[in-house]
Image (cartoon, rainbow, N blue to C red; front, side, top):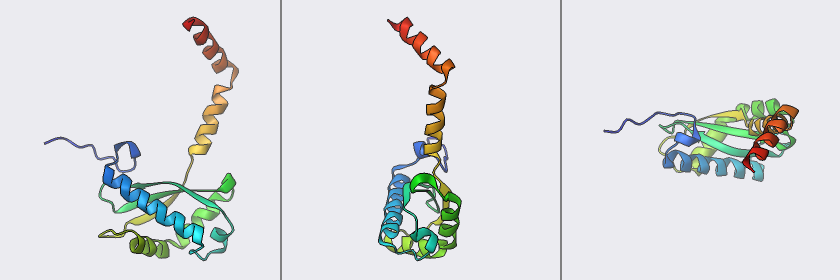
Length: 139
């Protein structure tokens, strides 16, 4: 029997089923946000992106990554989504055909911040010098 690595929150180690269920939940959430099904003033006043949903191996927990347009009021948006968690979980259960509705949690998507940090690092004089030195050595 093969030894399978249990990787709860990593898309790289996710099974096809985890990825498929995560994508179904992502679509359901996006549809609810687009249609205005969530009646909360904070959520209604923001354009919210759901770039990813990660499922645990047992499909009992969905971590939903969110980012409001422009990255403003992230904490307020996550708090509003958490306030509506019971409704959202019920809607997800209704829209996605699963045996059990997963628990849901919301997290800020920090990929954009990380990409910006890396971009700034690449523009520093030390890194530019090293890149140019490596480029000259390759020729």
